[in-house]
Length: 85
Image: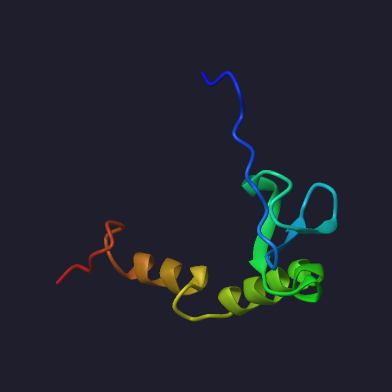
């Protein structure tokens, strides 16, 4: 166990959106698990939640990652991911 926590130093020009405090911050102020980024502008960071929501919708509608497609393939096979001859 470390006696002192190493604090990350923020870099000018890197912007993050803190999920805990719901605010834009320059350089990492909060732990990585609590933030989105880095973004190049504060405006991009301010729209981090909208960007994440748009990306989630894109992935949900992507046929390569659609769970319904994968479920249908498993039903045709033997449940092991392979199809019977």
